[in-house]
Each structure stands twice: as C-alpha cells, then as structure tokens.
Amino acid sequence: LLGKMLRIDVNSTEPPLNYAIPDDNPFVGVPGYREEIWSLGLRNPWRWSFDAPARGGSGAMLIGDVGQNAREEVDHIPTGAGGRNFGWRNREGTLPNVTSRPAFSEPLRDPIWDYGRDAGRSITGGYVYRGQALGATYRGRYFFADFVTSRVWSVALVPTGGGEVRADNPIDHSAELGTG
Image 1: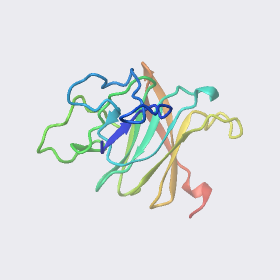
Image 2 (image 1 turned 90 degrees about the vertical axis):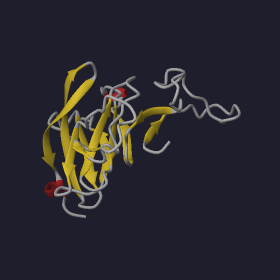
Image 3 (image 1 turned 180 degrees about the vertical axis):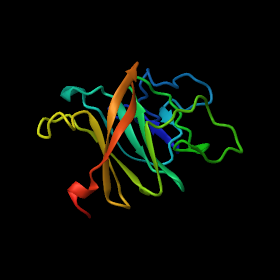
Image 4 (image 1 turned 45 degrees about the horizontal axis):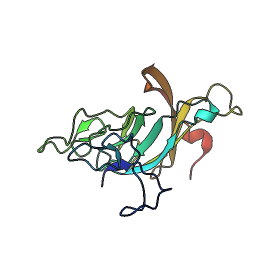
C-alpha cells in the first residue's frame, strides 16, 4: 500500500480487517487493485487537507507530496474523483524519473503546482484559506510551506471546469512572515 492514499471506514470492527471499505471507492471490485486505495502514484504525501465546504470550499483534497531528488508537488483531487495516479515513480512532479518500467496505471495526473530544489526540499501541505480576517486578496488561495527552507507560499486555485483547478499567481510570503 506504499505510495497510495487510502480511504477506509474506521467505524467498523468487522473481521478480518476491523475496518470497512466504502462501496464507492474507485477500485472496489477491480482485479489487481486493493479496494482501500483512493489514489496512487504518491511518493511521500506530507500533509493533506480538504477545501472546507462549510466555509465555501469545493471539498477537494489537496496533497503536499515530498519528492526525492528534484521536485516537490501539490496534487488536487476534486470531490468524488478517486483513482487518480500522480505518477510516482515514473515521474517526480512534472519531470520524468524512473521510466525503465511502465506506469502501474494510466493516465498519469500532473500536479497543479510543483517546484524544484532551488526553491525548497520538503513540501509541507497546507490549507485553502476561506476566512474573512485577511480580506478577499487571500480568500481561496492554497497556503503551503517548505520544511527545509522555512518558506511559505500560496497559489490561487483557478477553476477550469468539472471540479478541476489550476494553480496560478504564486506568492512567496516568507519575507513578510520572517524567518524560522
């Protein structure tokens, strides 16, 4: 189950798993896949969150996925769009990685944002800001950080249809927040 995001119901204690698998998981009944899998092709998802519908968000899942040698990435999964393959180990962010073996499944999904080692080395996923205190300028932006460099960024989430978004207008907030 490495490299995957799992979705289970922990309110069940039925043997043999002591958890239940939701019937609408994308790989229920699909030969060759574990039914717990919600998405795959992740290297090291380090913090994920949902764009809170109670605050006006879409309910989408955003994942900060730590790369290995070259790229850090932000992945986006619209509500109900499980089964996505984000490409690890064949890709790191948007760059080819180990391509000597074919991808486990196709198509591979691009991250909505990625950055190289010149900007940071260990993404920490964050949250979509839906508050009022900072005004409309920051509302709807996804804020995230890099653990190694102590940098903080935000990107605007621009709808492209069907619950999908693209990241745009990156802002580096590190200087205004100070170091450390």
